[in-house]
Length: 355
Ligand code: SF4
Image 1 (cartoon, protein in one colour):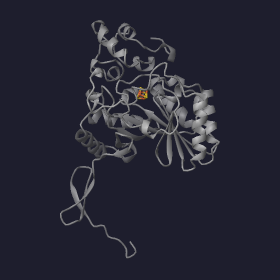
Image 2 (cartoon, rainbow, N blue to C red):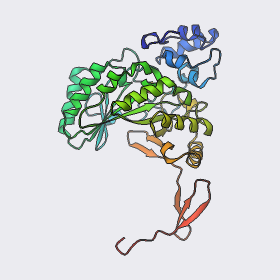
Image 3 (cartoon, helix red, strand yellow):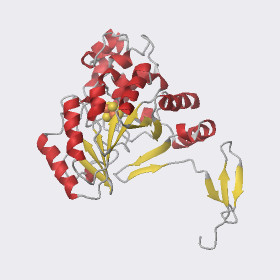
Image 4 (tube, rainbow, N blue to C red):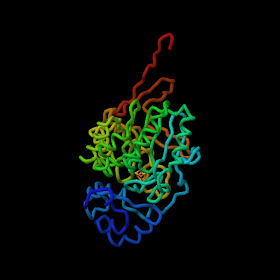
């Protein structure tokens, strides 16, 4: 398989020719492809052994007929971007930060994507006029401290376009933090060049790259080198993963994933509970199981390697950490705290006279 972003697989036929799906699945793959985009880059396709349909990398990108089954609770806008969008492409959900959806395309198309109804080829980038309107909104909202650049994957833009975006935002004095959400370091690490890394940072501002990966095999040597280029340019790196049934919903895989992030210089940040996006029921894990996995991570990993398990509340109400809880009140009102091995201990919450 050749390398490069242009040579990615984008059709059922190409997936079959690459040995990533059996020919008899063509009609099934085409039915799904009519609704949801396909994209698989060489960097990730090369990790998949042919004729291994249950490979955790393949499963994330090869369509499945279950994507066309919609649960009544699922929504085209599962995290409620639309009700919180005062101008096109901008979501203002929390007082001190906004999202700007710069681009609707990605290097790869994850079958569980929470914005799957909004991303895909041909969906385009935010127009110059729309970006100018977003900048005007930000200038007028001095409470905004952090801007999250997302999409789609904003690192699919050219370094020149990224630099223009960075500099335009950096010129607004009250904006102190630029956070770029991306899957590119694992999907196409060769595209994360020194020039791109430099384009993300601005003098006097903090740049954060939130790197999306779900399985430890995604953190290849190439991906780790891409992360190091981002760090060398001055970016702080944090992780984002989705808890996915059959991909990473077991302790050993999650532990290996979180350690791989830290080894790549990426602080494990969020483990997302799967959003209620259409056709994603087969991906979700019960919250009780997610909490149990988090208990195991806490027992076996340092705090440096432990993410927070998060749920985006449907309707646009924001994210909430969903446990497990480590402290509760006992029958007499005393604090009871659970240690990493699961044993419980009373804690006396003594305060000084001014406390
Ligand atoms: S890279 Fe992100 S936005 Fe793009 S398809 Fe995957 S989850 Fe969705």
